[in-house]
Length: 97
Image (cartoon, rainbow, N blue to C red; front, side):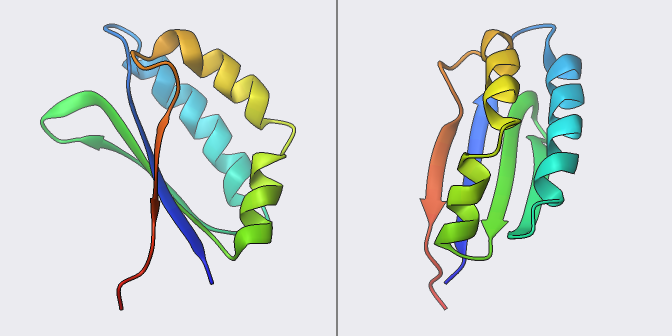
């Protein structure tokens, strides 16, 4: 079964462009992962500092491989001072149909 989730966070005032740049670089790496099926980055239409990332992985192993990728910790370390939350807020999703 696929593993689907979304991550959300809010860029600090004045940091949205840098967050978007970091996400762009990170997305290229994640999308290249063998088990990644989607890594789509959005902002809310009425709140451009609010970022949502929709992620889909082939299965649990692909998700675990993603979590252990060497570029994850540097990305999270660079992102942390640029967002209002302590870290990305993750919501894991289960299919209904």
